[in-house]
Image 1 (spheres, protein in one colour):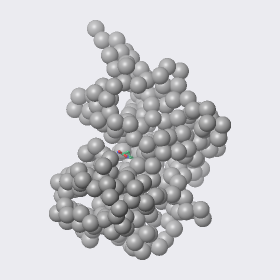
Image 2: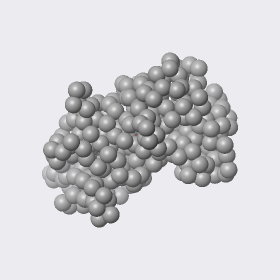
Image 3: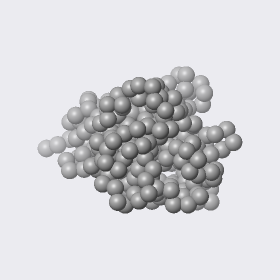
Image 4: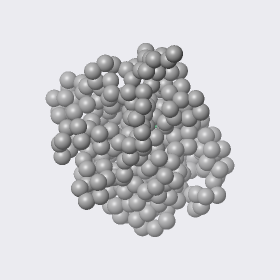
Length: 285
Ligand SMILES: N[C@@H](CCC[C@H](N)C(=O)O)C(=O)O
């Protein structure tokens, strides 16, 4: 017979799916192949990322961080940030702490989150984007507002980092682009030493855009919070949009991105608890 292992919660933000394990009392650090199996849609629970809650480090706790979130991609690699994951975890930690706001430590910094009383949606202040080529990182000095590539219809991108790296391509007709084919090629471009999340965006008005994101390590997600922030920041930097509030429509639904007076990007959207379960004892490290 099999033995039950760690309890987990399955959550999603606009069908961007997460498995959440609480590692605060007993650490949880499985090897990459086990993470890949847990996240596999075909052979495991299925998710876009595995999230592990840990106690905040001393330096972050001093600044008020309530907990640390580790984020693993479906290949088991650890990544620095994830907007929708932060919103999902914030929903849980706001309930647990009964506080108005919660500060979550991530590899990309401490992120302040809160619940919007009227809508019940969760917001996270994602910080500002970095446009320096070496911070993306890109392999060589490049104008990050005009990154030249040659992957079918994906020819020119904006490169940004908001804790994780993104390229955003603006196109006239998003529906007509074969994203799994061309975004996958762009993601492997030698200009990207750490690869990148590839956003393909279409401006549809002064306050709205459509966006599809081909995330690292090579998956098409229904929504991407950091990708939405980067697409809006890229559109502003290119002068394609001026509004301080933009609605980003993705296959899984809409996120709102607002830029505050300090230039910080505030990401807001719904969160859903899908189900709870147990991993197997064999999934322990
Ligand atoms: N879906 C996330 C981004 C997840 C991380 C990404 N795949 C990476 O490798 O950086 C979001 O909502 O931001």
